[in-house]
Image (cartoon, rainbow, N blue to C red; front, side, top):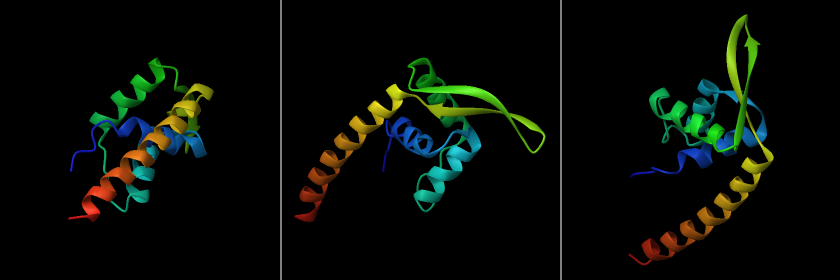
Length: 103
């Protein structure tokens, strides 16, 4: 199944709880989806950079275990977009469930 286009929303959801670095964002998505959604760096980082250029996330440097990492946090605008995306997903999901439930 193709979930193209859902990654930005999933990233915003992961960051809604706390700032994080890219690897941890990918791990959080994978864990919460029970391994179904496993985004690789080649997909994740371009999406993060696009979200940043759109003003939905911002980045900063931090140190973890003596290693400098780039962390991302959701912005106020990102929170608004996430709320809108959640509502749209619920509506779409309910419609698909109604259709598939009839099969």
